[in-house]
Image (cartoon, rainbow, N blue to C red):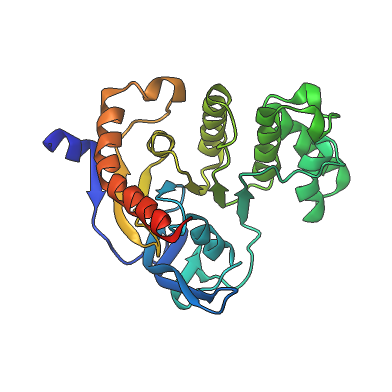
Length: 284
């Protein structure tokens, strides 16, 4: 048990420091459902992501994982509590934030290079410079031969590489990712995880990565947040003591990785079971 505790250090809850990249402080979010009932999505929720830190969020379905991301972007506003990004209260969507979705967010009528160049052009970068940057980032994700292809001509993994280039070209200080690799096969998913870590290590954005896959969370993260069954709150936080750089195809066989995953799964399992039992009771 002692070695498990050392492998996955359980952190004590604390108020977010003022210099955190992301600080969600004692937030509760309620809203009215279409049938007129009041619903609590998350409750007494506190999360801190330091500058340059990679945090993953796991929890049962409906626990508020995606809600957490929408609070950071400003698309949702807390009923009570505070949300700060780079020390400032969230009042609007920040240009410092990049978002990678589960579904493809590419413009289907635009080629790969036009998709990747779109962000810099929107931000006022001169056209020639925007396209030079786009070629550079397309090269970084290994798609230089596919600049003129359209999204429908690419595989799922290739489209996800375009999405990463499209996001990282804007050099976001904060990167929010909502189960971005869940639709990919295992081999492609592993390759994309390596790709993400490689890009992140160069830019050192602060990352919040939402996933249903505990192994993915442990393999990627500096810190893993475990949420309770809805209404979601933070049940526990674990510091992941695995060296970097990490190779996804190898790390899952590391005995320390297995220890960490077991410790966190023991915490997560009862929340997953509770969420499932509630679903059965309500018929969902």
